[in-house]
Amino acid sequence: MNGVLQEFLDWAYARHTNTLSWYIRPLFVLPLAYFAWRRSWKGIALTIVALLSSMFWFPPPERIDPQVQAFLDMEKELILSIGDLSPLYLLSVLAVVGSLTALCLAFWRRSLGWGLIIINLMALLKVAWSIGEGGDSGRAVLLPAMVGLVLCDLAIIWIARRLHLPISLRRPRGS
Image 1 (cartoon, rainbow, N blue to C red):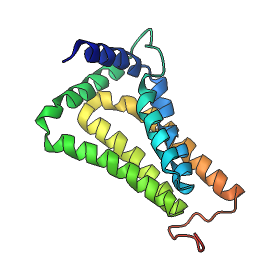
Image 2 (cartoon, rainbow, N blue to C red; image 1 turned 90 degrees about the vertical axis):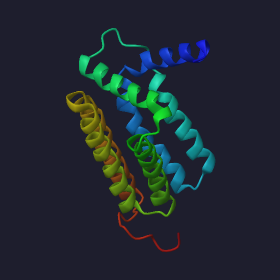
Image 3 (cartoon, one colour; image 1 turned 45 degrees about the vertical axis):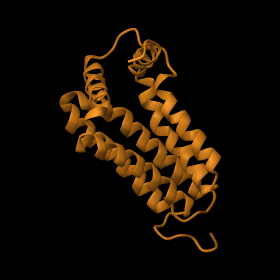
Image 4 (cartoon, rainbow, N blue to C red; image 1 turned 90 degrees about the horizontal axis):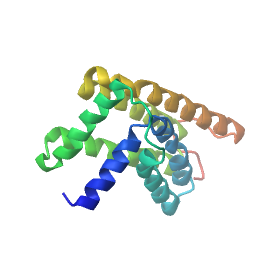
């Protein structure tokens, strides 16, 4: 691997061990939902760039929880096996892309009910995948994922109530 690229990946990986990024990443669901609702491709694209880069916004932690390190080592190994293109790797990539697409589509079509269902499924599947793939170390994802889930659900429900928007699986009339 190119020396500069390897240096960047090492720099980014050290920052990814800071769990603050784990807590803010689920909150990107909110601007993603907002821009999908507003039907703004530019906003959706910028949110995805911010989401992808957020894993290295924070400085490396002084101390890394061993459970976090073990989980990230498992993720790193999975990412580095991209050349293998195993069915599990391809399924994981498709699940991430598919869930983000489904989330955007739900809000684009103005369905708060489907949007909330997809947000909850994304969080629960992330936790299930993390524990399934990472074993005990996957439990490190549980608290950040659930905090993000609760905050996103509460924010969307609060906004819906403030704006008198129905939380329904049906598309509102006139949208």
